[in-house]
Image 1 (cartoon, helix red, strand yellow):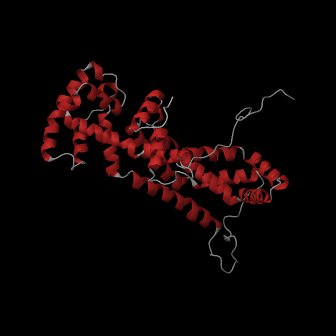
Image 2: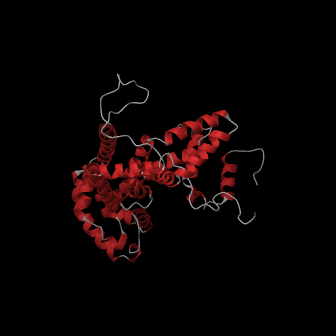
Image 3: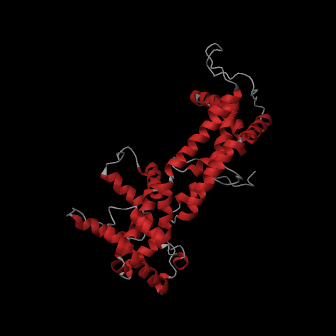
Length: 352
């Protein structure tokens, strides 16, 4: 009727979010969208299954439609939504460039505790959620006390377990145990101690997080960089360093460790407090080893193509650097780039 403008993202209260390969928080948003828009998704799949001109699309839509209208799909949907819900804030915190290490470590502990409580007390509430959703959308719910039948297998060869055992032990508990094991592996006691020690270098609020004992412990975790003589010298240097930092106006409004490193170089403090600056540079490696690596793999989905597809390809590496560090390259004038390229070697033409 011409009353509404059409276009991508217009007149839509909610959309089916596309998940990212390396961002788990995007998976969480996708699962919530599927639950919220389930009826609409089923309607669209039915239309495609009946009216699509392509037989392959009709077959794929029929297969997806049958799968989505099963108890197994709904059970897995809600289980993963609840698990990723506990890890959502932690995932987003670890993706930020300005990582708040102390809060991130607290979120790790909260995530572990939440998953443990879910494993111990969350089965009944999950089953109620799944059963209610199935009843609303006319999906049959199996009787938990009856024998579980594996699709495609005869009753003779089927493993004699109940539906309760399959869904609660083989799926619910097994997946939660895998998630907890992964968290414990990635954030063990040594890693957690390392991260908390690094947080003591943060210059926010006039170096309120400074802790001399933890910073000495941090240096001990890098025996190849700090000898016993260096550790003894660092003990005294930290006392002088914190007094200098807290009494200097130029260091009073810094927000992160990166700002601290930059300001130390600008004021030549990195030469005065060389051992402390070494700790700062080691701390700056943490985002490179976590969030930046994750962003690299995300960027590869956009940069990699048929002509540049190998990790060792120098052309691919150069394109990734420019794409990932686009904030830096946006500040460089195109004329400077043209002149640099022009002077690399003689060219037939002059670039304008």
